[in-house]
Amino acid sequence: MFNTVLILLQLFLTTVMGIYFCNMLRGQHQSKSGIETDSLKELEKLHRLKQIHLTQPLAEKTRPTNLSEVIGQEDGIKALKAALCGPNPQHILIYGPPGVGKTAAARAVLQEAIKSELSPFRSDARFIEMDATTLRFDERGIADPLIGSVHDPIYQGAGAYGPAGVPQPKPGAVTKAHGGILFLDEIGELHPTQINKLLKVLEDRKVFLESAYYSTGNKDIPPHVHEIFQKGLPADFRLIGATTRGPEDIPPAIRSRCVEIFFAPLSPDHIQTIADSAAKKGNFSIDSGSLELVCKYAQNGRDAVNIVQIAGSVALLDKRHNITTEDVKWVAEFGRYVPRYEKKVVDGHSVGLVNGLAVSGADCGAVMDVEVCAVPCPAGTGKLSVTGIIETEELESRGGRFIRSSSARASVENMLTVLERFYGIDPSAYHLHINFPGGTPIDGPSAGTAIITAVYSAMTNQPVSHRIAMTGEISIHGKVKPVGGVAAKVTAAANAGIKTVFIPEENYKDCTWPDTIQVVAVGHISDIFSHIFGIATDHRQMPVVISPPQTHIYSATGTTK
Image 1 (cartoon, one colour):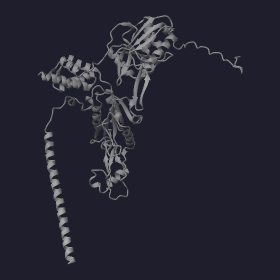
Image 2 (cartoon, rainbow, N blue to C red; image 1 turned 90 degrees about the vertical axis):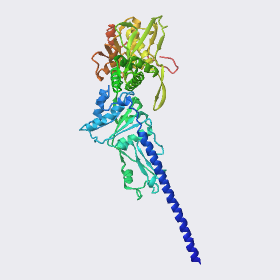
Image 3 (tube, rainbow, N blue to C red; image 1 turned 90 degrees about the horizontal axis):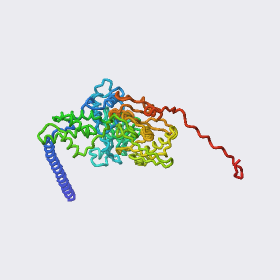
Image 4 (cartoon, one colour; image 1 turned 180 degrees about the vertical axis):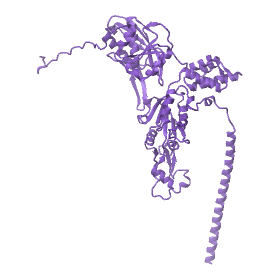
């Protein structure tokens, strides 16, 4: 009897378990069928989406596909090829304003390197492009698209590796770029933690990953995972970082490992070439007047293409294929494009007006006016007024924000000291008004020579030629100190019609100069005054040294002896 009950119970349990597993299998089959049905629907939807195509944007049509199509960057292209197409390719940092071809040149240089017999890049070398402004990583180490990460078995989606307790390494962009180029656009925006990780990868040319779930003695871990954790993922690539920031905003540790290349702002002629090419590729005709107007409003190649594209669309809506000046004017007005300011000098002389030279933006030279009005007054009653510059400015760096006084004011003070010591002029006997029109902030040291020349001209009523310009810092001993951006400044002066430029003699050997301009190296302000005002001064003769006061010896009672 007992055995019969036991047999019936086993039969019952077996039946229940059979029904349970049958239901599970049926459910899995139904679930699989449902997934397959949904997948087919999504695939059909995806195929329908792929059948929809819009026309290719003009900006994409005009994008350079090789280095020869990058306009206005001959020196930058030469430096790129020297750094990457030889037997020992280097890491590179490309500086430059937006829309001058940094990204296009980075894409094309790899193809040039592959063609080079000296280059170690193979024909299958990859170009991996990432935008540093959108690169984000998980502080817990779950995800890092740049360096790579480990998917631990406890996380959802571990798959078959999860129950076995196997950590899964996930390669990042540095490994995908192995044997090729990793291009980081706007590298200056990269998170400091990622920068430190990237430095380690550049040093080791490998990526070493860690996981608390990895054990060398775990036999369930596949051999390839063991090798990754023990020997690292390969990451032997060359980095190209592009940025619109200045070198001072890039961590020194990155800069020291890279060749730094500077892409120059595009000149109006370069922008005109780009605009003309964009019009042809868009099947538009455009006259020279319209092209000149595009160049007036476009600050870079991207602006030029956008203006041509919208102006061309306006023409097509009017059933025309020719872009007129009215089309360009309308685009510039509704797009609020700011016209490019380019000073052009004319023949003549002025009292208290001198052409100074400055650098704005990314190494873009500019000619600026330095105006001075000097009104005689009783000695000791003179007043000094300086306008058109920033007396204080707020600067931001990786260390935080700080406020500094304008260095232009310091140049004015130095100038007054030099005039008094070397030329016997009492500044307190004049009401001086120094102005920098145009609202452009002035980096004071480089304006020193222009300021003192304009002040002396106003005080002595001696005119200065409009065809003369100058740059250089003035010390209190009248020496002309070296300044930055001289090449860009001289180029801007030549474009403005300047015939003679005075620069610090220590800057003279730094660059080559345009053939249309005379560059004069000076070491002391007297050299400039000799050329302009005909004043012969021996700057080696220092002012008379004032005798030191007599030494007083005090007695114990406090009286002097």
